[in-house]
Structures are given as C-alpha cells and as structure tokens.
Amino acid sequence: MTELHPEMHERRILGTELLWAFGVGVLIAATLTMIVFTALTRDINPPSNVERIDPKTLHLSGEFAEQNLGTTVGADGSVTVRVIATQFMFVPRCLAVPQGRRVTLRFTTPDVIHGILITGTNVNTMVVPGFVSQVHTSFTRTGDLLMPCHEYCGLGHSEMWATVQVIPENEFKPGQDGRASCAQR
Amino acid sequence: MRSVKRLCLAHFWVAFAAFAVACVIGTWQMWVRSPLGANVGTPGQYFMSVTAHGVAMAYVLTTFFIMGFGYFVAETALGRPLPGKPWAWSAFWLSMIGVVMTVIPILLGQASVLFTFYPPLTASPWFYIGLVLVVVGSWIWCALMIAAMTAWKRENPGRPVPLAMFATVANAVMWLWTTAGVAVELLFQVIPAALGLVQTIDVGLARTLFSWTLHAIVYFWLIPAYIAFYTMVPRAAGGRLYSDTMGRLTFILFLVYSLPVGMHHLMMDPEHGNGTKFLQVLLTAFVSVPTLLTIFTITASLEIAGRLRGGRGLFGWIGALPWERPMVLATGLAFVMLGFGGFGGLINMGYGMNAMVHNTSWVTAHFHLIFGGSVVIMYFAIAYEIWPRLTGREHV
Image (cartoon, rainbow over all chains, first blue to last red; front, side, top):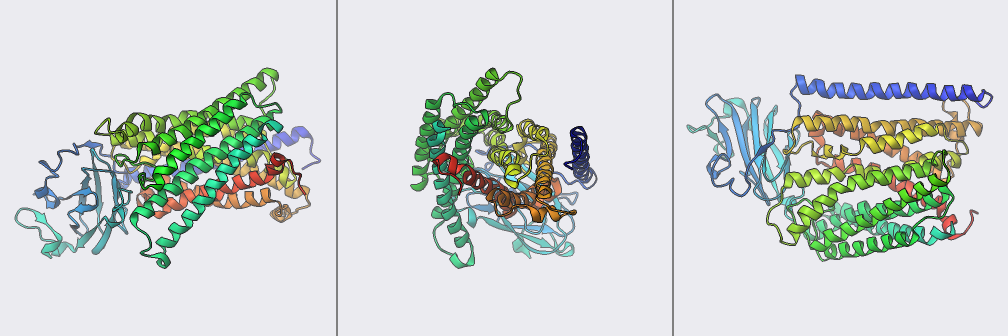
C-alpha cells in the first residue's frame, strides 16, 4: 500500500468506504423490510392502542370494575381477559384462557408503572397509569405459564406475579354468563 | 497542559471512586441473586443497592470522566489554555455537592426508585435536586467546550478543528439537547410531586420526557471511547487513521440521529401509537450507521498498523498487532463486546423479537455489554494512556 501514489491512496480509501457503506445500507434495508413485512402480514406490532382511562375511578364502574375482571367470552366467541396490576399483585391472580383461540388481554393500573410478560410466549407490554394496554395473542401449548410483573414497581415487586392457565379447547367451558376462571377446572 | 492537570485528576478520581463502589455493590447483587446468596438481605436493601449501583455508574462515573477528559482534550488537541478555568472548578464542586445530596437519601433508603425514577414512585426531593445539580454542572462543561472551540477557531481561521475536539463539542451539543428531557421531567413533574406541591403526575408524559434523554445518554457515555478509537488507537498500534472524514461523519451522524432516538425505549408502552414507534425503529436503524462505519475505519486503521509491523496475508496482520499495549488490547476487547451488544440492539429493534426480550435480563445484558464492555474498558485505557501526562511522570 505504501508504494501507491497519494492520490491513488485517497481514491482507494474512498472506494472501500463506499463499498462498506453500501453493505451497511443493504443490512439496514433488509432488517427494516423484515420488520415491515412481519408487521403487515403476520400482524406483529407492539401494543399501541393509546387508550386513556382515569386511574382514580377505574375500579368504580366500567370494564375494570371487580365483576368484569378475568376472562369473558363474548356472544361471538371472542375471548377477552381484563386484569388490574396493582402494588403488588394482579387481579385476578390466575387467568383462564383456551388453547388455539385468539385472546385479547387488557391491562390497566390504579397506582404505579407495572409491566407483564408471559413466559414462553411473545406476550409483553408495559402497564402505565392512565392507559389501557392491550395485547392480542393465541396460546399454542396447554399448561400453566408464569406471568411476572417485569417493571420495578416498589419494594414488593419481586412478589408480584400471576398464572396463565392455558386450557385445551374442548375443556374450556365458560358459564352461562360467559365467564371463565381457573377455579372451575 | 499544566493548568488543567489538577482539574482532570480531580474529575477522574471521583469517577473511578464511584466505579469502585458500584463494582462492589454489583458483585453483591449477583451473589444474592445466585443460589449461593439466596434469602440474604431484604428487598429494601436490594433495591437501595440497585439504585446506588445505577446512579454511581450511569451518572457519576460517566459524567465526571467525560468532563475531565473534555478538559484534557480541549487543552491538548487545541494547544491553548482552557478558557474559563474557574467556571470548570465551580462546575466540579457543584456536581460534587449534587452527588452528596443524591447519595445521602439513597443510603437512608429514601430513594429506592432506581436510577430511572419510575414516577409516580417518589423519592426524597434531595435525591432529584442533587441529580439536577450534577446535570447543571455538566451544562457548564458543555458551555466551556463550545467556548474553547470557538476561541480556537477565531485564532485559526480556515483550519479544521482537530478531530478529538470536534467530537467533544459534538458530544457537548448532543448532551445539552438530550438532557433537556430529563431536566423538564424532574423540574416540572417529579420534584413538585416529591415536595407535595402537586398530587398527580402525567406518567405517559414523564416517560416520554425521560426517554428523550435515554439512549442518547449512552452515546454521551460512548463518544469518549470513540474519540480514543479515532485519535489514540491508530497511533498506539503503530499505524495511522484510515480516514479522518469518516471520523467526522460518524460524530455528526451520532449528533443527528441520537436526538430523539431514546423513545424506542417506549416500544412496549401504551401511550404511543404505532406511527411514533415505527419512526423510532427507523431512527434506531440509522443510528447503527456511525458504529458500523467506526468498526470499518478502526479495523482498517489497525490493519495498516499490522501490515507496517510485518503482518502478511488475509488475517496475519491481526497477530502482528502490539497486543501488549493496553490501548490496543482494550480496543480489541471493546470491539468484541460492542459487536455482541450492537447486534443485540438490532434484535431489540425488531417488533417481533423485542416482544420476547423486553424488560428481561436480555436487556440488562445488552446495556452491560455496551457499558462495561466498551465504555468503561475504554475509559480505563484512556486514563492509562494520559495518566503519566497528568501526574508529570513519564512512561517507563
């Protein structure tokens, strides 16, 4: 390299840099294409429903009042699970869901920031005071899954977790009122 | 050079003392979380220690090291005395008072909100006010860096600013902009709530403001390491910098892309829609460009050094590098860690994969690879390199 004319040197440096920049561009374009492709075709998006709720009154009436928490099967067969995350527990503590069906999970909190994930799945969202977090999913395996709080919420944070009970489709039998809970098994 | 020696050393001693304490605390946390130390300590002690570890590493070590190194660069790269030295000392003492005000409530267990605050969790007001003082001290540093460069430019019309100072000022400008987020959050939301002046906090807004600062703060920490890559490593390896232009481009790209990029920390938050989140994904993808350019330029610079030292063949130059020199070895290790951390970051960027790793130990590992593996290892390499010049002792 050292015997090259200085001008050749500069040109060679520029050439290699442009080549590398092209490679970087291809890498980034490919990654972004994958993200957009899966978002559009497989509906893989972050939870972004931007739905406000008053944390001071959510327990008094509406969908997060005590009698509406847990699993509800609508007339059309849609499954919705409503959960309140609060220092330092989830209400209810066990979520009953059917295997292989589209499930909508809705979370909110009356106090501080929390977050949830369900182990072995891609269910994951923050739970922020003032907002309802919504995740759609479909559970592929039956059994009990752990749902810990994953955002620091105070000194009792590590005690805060719930269980998700994935029930085989033929054993999932909601009551007359369309309600299902872990205890009924 | 004489004039800033004590100033730099004072900053470095505070930075490395904070690092030593935070290391001990971090080791204790690993122990109590392992089967060996199970059931040792209370949650109160544990989360107090997490807060102390985060504050010492993320706010004290970094801010003090960057300020001290900035004064060194301003005087050595520009070859002129630092203007406004009394201001630099007042910034140091202001930050020191801030550190003491922050540490006392942490040790009293009145600030176990971690270094990321998480309002509406509330700590003692002194904790937040102390951190604001540290930030204000760093703002004085930013002003001094800009003033030093401006004065040099007046004396040297038409000449390009030396790369190390160019990068330092880019970092100062970025820091001024990015700390505005956390400053607004603390001054207008968190501190009034901690003082009991207001009863409610808009948590979505608080998280958005804090995220304005987040991530760009990582580039603030990282840029001194990059300054070492571009200005110290090629010389230490016995070669020369492959391309000065790429260095300047890298620092400009950091400045441009990192401004709002921290909001990608809110990817799983309910207060932002998918449009905002996709914009953050785009910015995150673009901000990988300066790092990828740096990997190429510095590897090419090392190849020049290796070949000058007689390395042959496709990979022979790697073995020919002077690995016994701390700066070269630190760079080699930093590149490995930065590689793992960086590719992990690209995984965090994807909608699908982020859903599997968000808020798990994966993320903790990601930022420890970048922070411990690249940032701190290069801080030590830099300190090792410039310490003899600061103390007046020569290399043996």
